[in-house]
Amino acid sequence: MRNLFAFLFRYRGVLVFGLLEVLSLTLLIRNSNYHGAAFFNSSNAYVGQVLDLRTRIYDYFRLVQINQGLVAENAALRQQLYPADTAGRVAAVLPVSPDSATQARLRQSGRPDSLLLGLRQLPARDPDYPLIPARVINNSLRNVDNYLTLNVGSLDGVQTGMGVLAAAGVVGRVKVTSEHYATVTSVLHSKTSISAKILRDGTFGSIKWPGEDATHVLLDYIPRQNKLVLGDTVVTSGYNAIFPEGVRIGIIDSFVKEQDKNFWTVRVRLAVDFTKLTYVYVIKSRPKMERDTLEVKAGLKPEGEQVRP
Amino acid sequence: MRELGVVLIQLLRLAAYVAVHTLIISKLVLFDVGWCFFYLGFLLYLPITTPIVVQLLLGFVLGFSMDLFYDTGGVHAAAAVLLAFLRPWVLRLLTPRDGYDAADSVNIHQMGGQWFVVYLGLLVVLHHAAFFLLELGSFRTFGLTLAKILVSTLFTGITLLIIQLLFFPSRRKR
Image 1 (cartoon, rainbow over the protein chains, first blue to last red):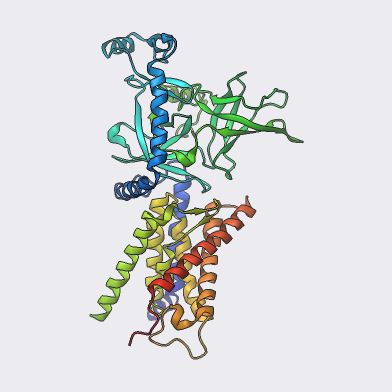
Image 2: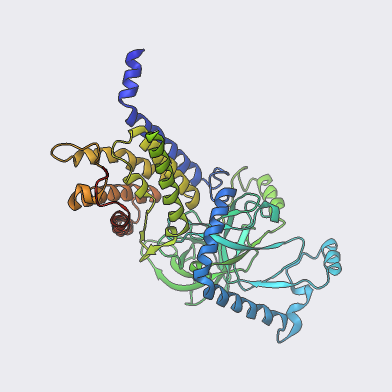
């Protein structure tokens, strides 16, 4: 027995080292699953407070930029308030479900306000699709997997799996929420896969992030025989029910035909400037749960599998 | 009583390094490839005689708190523990001819510029190599990772050198 203790004591450095490394790597592997440990991330309340403090410090250095962004957004909102033709303001053309209950609630609340998010007009106060405005308090750009932290949480109605949009377009998907904070998997994540389509002709593809550049993503699975045009707008397809259909992702920047590949290699410039991201909106699409259960029932999706953003 | 004082001072140092790193340094990025791992200064400038187990535990606590801020799971912790494990080896490698004095510490004025630069450079480059390769999880974009390692090593190294020159006493305490 004494020999055992002597042995343990002699190699205590290596043993503790091994133990701690295994622990860290376990944490790392658990975190890279889509739904990682709920506690150990930046949506934790204490970490959120520190990040808030840091944001307040950094805001002093960015006041001009933030003001300019807000002025631009205000101008855009004012344009929506006083459009040239008032047709766009009528509730009938907004993407609101036509069932009688929703319509009745809308009539009660008067004309719904709407916001233009990534080319898509969304009602701001529709009870079925709440838009939750949020402030980005932490943002990474240059890692292999990038995350954002928002200053809204489950008390504000944010839930895991909701989509996140900025005024310019798609930002990401909520990963974990605590009471007052939420962590968001950004589009700049190695496991990103967003179902997308080209607005001009409706060709479907899938958005991937190659991991080098915070301004560009790749659009996969566009067949070789399709004609592409530089500057075409790429929008969400609405296939995975996290984002509404038709929200802008970006525009086609370049495309090349590679040998021995059936698909175009298309580079898309992101509409959202992730380096200046400050205000975003969390959106919910109501039929998602129902649609997921239906698709599981139909055997299209194995139970428990999570749809990626 | 003296030991208690040392422990208290080290805890204050830990808090100071973490606060400065998270509140100010963490957003600095050089040319999109260089980060400053300022918090490593805490581990690198611990007293030479710190027990290895304490060093490893401190490395883990420090790295793990950084992981919470960066949402990286365990990358910072793994790399910091590796750094804490390698530090005694590097110190042994660089032992002066007649061994370390009881009063010796990691201090550029006491140990000399050459000793200090080798010590700092070697440990920082090992830490950064481990960190960026772990973060990547593969050897995919190796050129970019290599650039990140080199630029970050220079950035961290120069920052910690400045800290050393500014805040460490040039004369031995008697």
